[in-house]
Amino acid sequence: MKKVLITGALGQIGTDLSEALVERLGTDNVISCYHRKKPEVMDGSRGLYEHLDVTKPGELDALMEKYQPDTIVHMASLLSATAEKKPLMAWDINMNGLIQVLEAGRKYNALVLNPSSIAVFGPDSPKDNTPQDTILRPTSIYGVTKVAGELLSDYYFTKYQVDTRGLRYPGLISYKTLPGGGTTDYAVDIYFQAIQKGCYTCYLKEDTSIDMMYMPDAIKATIDLMDADPSTLKHRNAFNVSAMAFTPAEIAASIKKFMPDFTINYEIDPERQSIADSWPNSIDDTAAREEWGWKNDFDLDAMTKDMLENLKKILK
Ligand code: SER
Image (cartoon, rainbow, N blue to C red; front, top):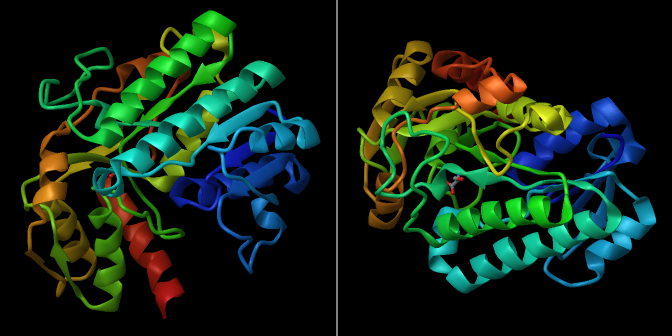
C-alpha cells in the first residue's frame, strides 16, 4: 500500500482512517473523497481532498487516472437506520457505488477494501459467538446490501483476480466524528451526553447486546488487513472482527465507574430495536486472528476512560 483513495473520507471511519494513513504514507499519498462540498477546515492532515459522487460512472475513473492509487478504501455508505427509511437510496449508494469501485479496482489493478458489517447476520444466524461462516439472511435493507456487497467482492476476486478484502465492522465508537443513521449510534452519543448533560435517554432496551469496537482498534484492523500477505487469507469478504459486546445497561455501568452521578433512562425506538434484535449478541473472530493476526487493544472500560478524557477536552 503506497497510495490510497478513500471514498466517504469525511464520514465516521474515513475521518480517523485518512489521518492514520497520512501519518504513514504522507499527505500526497492519501486522496480523501467525499460527496459534499469541501469542508472549510481540510488541512494536509487528512490528505488531498477531492469531490466524488461514487455512484456516477466516470467520476471515480477520472480520479484513478489523475492519482493512480494502488488501493481503494470504499467507506461511502448509508447506515442501517437511514437505509431503512430510504431503501432505494441505500441500494443506489451501497450497491451502485460498490460496483463502480470494483470496476475501478479491475481496470486500474488496485486493491479494494470494501467494508461489511455485523448487519450481514439475521434472525436465523446463531446469536452468540456468531461464526465466520454461517447463515446470512439479514432482514434490514442495509444488511441485504452488505451481503450482496460481500458476494460481489468475492466475485471480482475469483473472476478478475481483483485483490478484494473486507471486514464485518461491529458498532464503532469514536470521539472525532459522529456516526449518522446507524443502529449502534447510541454507544457514541451516550458519551457525548454524559459529558454535556450527565444523563442519557437510550432508544434501545437495556439488555440489547451488540458487538462493538473502539475506533483505534477499527483503524488498526483496517490497515492490518490491507497489509496482510494475500497467501495467508483463506477468507476475503468479509472477516468477523470483534473487541467487545455490551448492552446499554453495561455501557452505562462503565460510565458510572468514572462519573458516579451519570444516569440512563430508556425510550425505545421500535425500528432501531427491531434491527438490533436481528443482529448477533457477540461475534467469533477466530478466522481474523488466525489468518492475519487480528487482536484488539481496547475493552469496554479502557474505551470509556479514553472517550471521556478526550471528550472533556473537546467539549469544554
Ligand atoms: N454501525 C452500523 C449501523 O448501526 C452497523 O454496521 O448501522
